[in-house]
Length: 130
Image 1 (tube, helix red, strand yellow):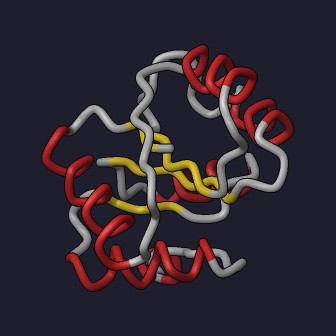
Image 2: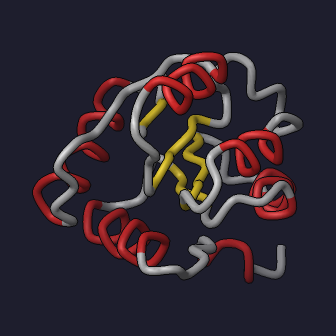
């Protein structure tokens, strides 16, 4: 499942998921309500990537609800923000990773593979001392 307001970044994510990580189906959603409705009507999902600015996400306040609703799915946040507090908030909210939209293709693949395989992806910027 994929939600991102930036169409180019969304297509990059879709390509990595399907071509590199061999996902058979990638579903694009626009709002939190779309996510909740999809899970009721369709099969369970294994990975969900959410734009931090997704309508209904409410600055990640509803993220724990999504985690509970999506069960065993791995969840990550994508964002144009590289602010440390945004990264930390996403992780504290239950995200399995945080992808800044300026990362290169190799890093996107590495991050998504890590998340899919049970790891937590944290941008290297989080360790900067500034």
